Amino acid sequence: MRAGSAWVAVAALGMALSVSVRATSEVPSQAPAQPPVIEGHGGPPPPGQPAAPATPQSPAPRPAGPGGPGGPGGGQGRFPAQQRPKGDPDVIQRGRGIFAGACGPCHGADARGGQLGGPNLLRSELALNDKAGELMYPVIKNGRPGTQMIASPLPDADIRAVIAFVHDLQSKIGGQGNPPPGSEVELDIVVGNAQAGQAYFAARCASCHSATGDLQGIATRAGQPKALQNLWVSGGRALARGGGAVRPIGAPRAVTTATVTLASGEKATGTLLRLDDFLVTIVQDGAQRTFRRHGDTPKVEITDPLEGHRALLTELTDADMHNVTAYLVTLK
Image 1 (tube, one colour):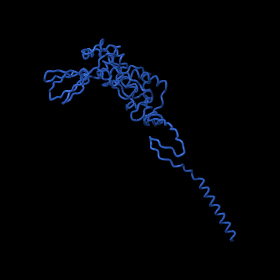
Image 2 (spheres, one colour):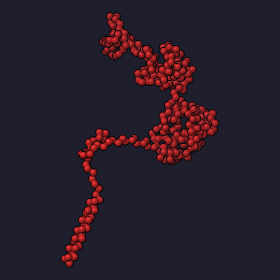
Image 3 (tube, one colour):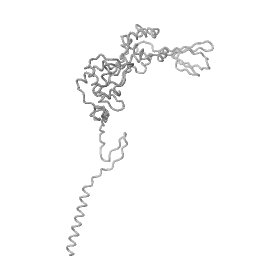
Image 4 (cartoon, rainbow, N blue to C red):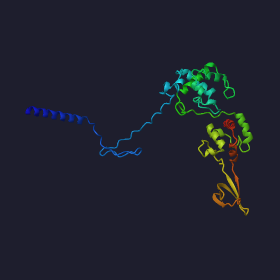
């Protein structure tokens, strides 16, 4: 009995050791402790190990919106009630070209609204709820009385192609008003009437400017029409803010001058640097001169060549601005 008991005890001890060794072998190896790394500042490598080269992190892809690829309905509609079957790629491509020429000026090249006041079709309730043209077709064909939406002379097939293009755009939009994917579209701002712009120029601008004088070749010097529009609306100040235009060599820069008349009758005229209730500072013959002010003494007369442009900003309409730009674009 004693021998049997001893044998049982030895066997139990062996099983316990086996279980202990097995459990120990299954414990995952612990990585050596490393000093904490502050995000954005890196940190020292563990002792005895070389620093690992930084691996550039590619930016995470922009998540698809509810109406984009991977969204509800496979990208065909933001909500189940607005889902549609995918359109014919050839018809969509044809509709893209028709939309750009016939609809883009009002609704924008990307359908998010244009300069002539057309609504954003990517957020239009009528366009979103349209299934197969039953809502959009009558509006395009017949227009909407009392609005800028006039009847379209497009053939029925072209109207259907435009509708297919708009549906395709809506299937790709993201959340929060993001534009549909694709390259950025450069907008054409030359949408005014050049003849009306010439008449406006003659009435409001010709007293200071001349198409054959200081503005000769202004369209070529300015480059893009957008830079030209910024240039003339700002009175030339767009040059200092990187507006893209180039001042002709030797052409004077518009500066504000001041004439200070002292109590003795002495006058000093120069470029105005500072004017407040206490001091007036001018640059005269390369030197700064500062005069103390007490009420209206000394008398200060300001000459601002951009005063007309400043006053114009309070009454300039979008139509006038676009018309004048369309005229100035012709001054090559």
